[in-house]
Amino acid sequence: MNYVLLDYISLSERFVDQLKNLDEKSQRQVLRLSKRYNKGKIFALERKDPIIKLAVALKSAERTLLKYREAGISEEIFKATFDDIRIWCENLENRGWKNIGWIQQNHNQFELFKIGRLQFQLYKCKSLHFDYSKLPFSRGSNVVNIHIYPSY
Image (cartoon, rainbow, N blue to C red; front, side):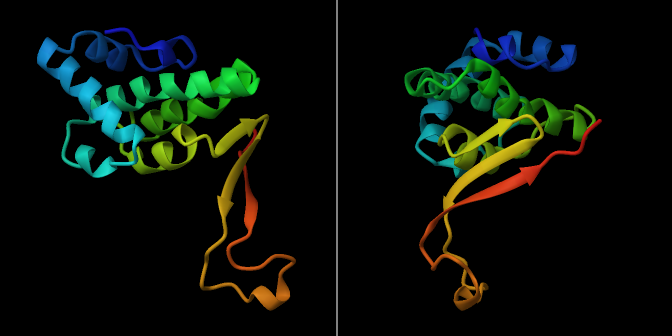
C-alpha cells in the first residue's frame, strides 16, 4: 500500500518498514477504517494496534491533501501541519502513535494549519468556563487559537 504522506514527513525507518509490510487483511482494514476515521468515528481505532492507527492517519491525510490543493494552500503548509504525526511518534520514542482524535478533529477536518512556528486552529468557542463579558467575542463565536512551537 502506498502512503502519499510519507513523501511529506520523515518517519523512522522502523515505522516505514512496518507500514510497507502490512498484510492484505491489514491493508483492507486500514482502508475501511480510514473511511470511518474521515467521518469522525475515531472510536473504531481505540483498541487497534499503533501501526494500524498510524496507517489510518496517513491514508486519511490523502483526502486532506486534496482539500489543500482545492483551496490553493501550499504543500509546504500541508507538510508542516502534518509533521505533527512524526513529532508525536518521536515523542513516544517511536513505539507508536496515539493522538488519533487530535489529527482527525483538527488536521483532517481542515481546521488546523502550521505556518512557521505557529499553528492556527479554527474553532467555535463553546467553553462554559470563560467570562464572556470580559472577552471581545461571545460564546459560539468562531475564533482562532494559536499554538506556538518552540524553536530548536
